[in-house]
Amino acid sequence: MLKMPPAFQMPNVNLEEVSAELARTGKRVHVLWQEAETLAFVARGREYRSEFHINPADEVMYMLRGEMRLHYRTSEGKEEVSVLTEGSIIYTPSGIPHSPRFPPDAFALIIERKRAAGEIDAFQWYCPKCDDLLYEGRFVVSDYALDPVSTAYAAFFDSEQHRTCGGCGNVTPDPR
Ligand SMILES: [Fe+2]
Image (cartoon, rainbow, N blue to C red; front, side, top):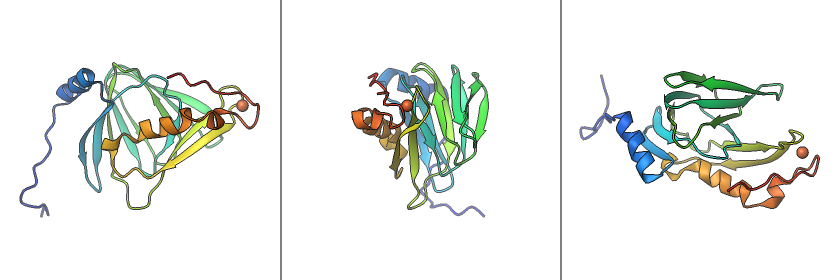
């Protein structure tokens, strides 16, 4: 038996229309729904995507338009790339540092779950010269509509100290 409040409207969303709306407004994400066990949003790609995101939840990404290069780091710390062509879907288990790189005219449907109370998302940057960990930002992602990735970006790029490598001294430039 379904247990839903009587006023609940099941979201029924056309993904083409959502993508067109993102392209028109320039916004990065459009949240379709956020519930305890399911959260879905359409994301437009962004320039300069360089961080690795570590989710406390599993994630499914489906490429609606364009191509994604999903960089990720293995348990040995090696960087690999999985290319997601238009119409392809990929499953990323929780805990794998991953960096979805796709251009602003490409769109992906992302499905995960809403964070439980106290869960932390981590965003890591590595040195482009020596691959040392440069900086890790840790955030509580309570609401995807607040665009947590942009918050993490600002924390990294606004600080030259965060972008300076403790290993080799290289300063990652701010490309914005
Ligand atoms: Fe370095």
